[in-house]
Image (cartoon, rainbow over all chains, first blue to last red; front, side, top):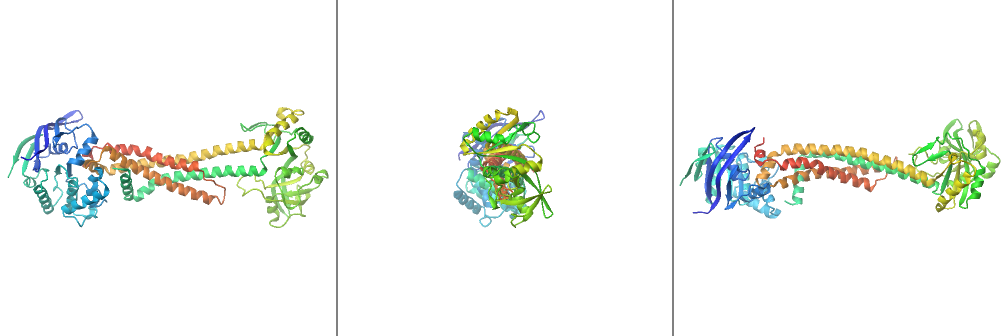
Length: 229
Length: 401
């Protein structure tokens, strides 16, 4: 069995709004192993976004622990969380979230800038990664000069460039037409074949069908966890 | 991320919004250039006054009627109103009582309304002895100065300063012509060489005319000198001479009847006054710098709000709060520093251009004050927006529309 890459234990998350406590997650535990392609599914309000934020170290749980590569994540320091996001997590967003008026190359280089990689090495890695997603001739284009599918490819290249432990994709095809969406999903499948660990958050059954493992959430708890194939 | 990365990042951000960046800088540019310009005018004025005084000679002492307190810029009964109790005989006493006095001359002043061929001008007229020209370092450009024989014989002769001579005679030599002074005909005996520079100040040293002391007493219906002007042997003797003069005059007069005024006292008082004005001018201009700083803060706050998603994304890919703080702070500092540099250049150019009209002098302290202040403003007014950016919650920021 491949090694454990992510383990979350007894995670709970409560929000307090105007004195009213709202429970987004209650007692969620799960383990992800290296190379797994997992989809987290659930209707809106099921807590899947909250779970993704906690896995991605963007948010802190009210209770429970997160272990990445068997290291417990100290949730105390912003500085520390930023470092973990930089080293271990590659985010892919529904909205792409590329920097405007910034070339595809510079967008892909961004995480490496915060990883203190020297400019030359940064450029080499970013170019290689853009080639990997098939955009070797679009490196100097601004996001506004690229199609939605191409923009998402740049975003995926950005997520991959630090060689992260986990790729965390939040509805990556939500803003794309079906053809581009299919291409992006194919790209994720290829990455999976090469051994990448991918977590896909979606409410779309067709998208989730590409994953090898499907975890379903409802009302803040895991209701099913099926491993296919 | 190191400093050069932050600077590159800030420059790129400012480039994407050029017009806004320039407009924001404009506040700082105006502030810095006006500080430099106004201070250079003030300092130029000081320089001008100092050189004018020095051309009179630093070893000059004025004995004035009444008590004048230079320290407080007050006089017990303004000197103009005071009836002079000085006598010509005091001059002899002074020369006998002090070994360091080289020359002394009485002076009586009056309105110099001079007419020549229908043209009338007004100048400062003084009745003096021959010595006066040596005391004040005046030399004749053409003709001759007032001589003691003119004084003894109460001759109706006049020596024109450069300005009245030019005003009345233009380029032609006035010597030998007759001018009218209060209805009385005077022979122009000489014309003085110009001393001062352009006439930015009210009291231009070249705007004078001189007649013999005795003639002036008659002309103005006076009997006593208005002032006694003394020149010491050297500059080092000024202190000794003023003590001697005081002692000599106190034998005959009361303390309140006269004031011994050293050139240096007068100069100190005036430069002190002018430096207060200079600092005040700089201070007023500094207020506009402050306004420029508020402009920077305003635009940085707008920029943080506009770039909320960018901040969220940067945090998601690993930017620490400190990275975000530095990014926005450095952007604000670069804005104000660039504004400061452009302001210094504009202020300096403006000051050089003004130099054609009035003397200006760019001081290092005003340049340092302006540039230091503008960098400081970038930090002070950039901190609040930068802190706001660094504290944004990445999840909220990424959701921001």
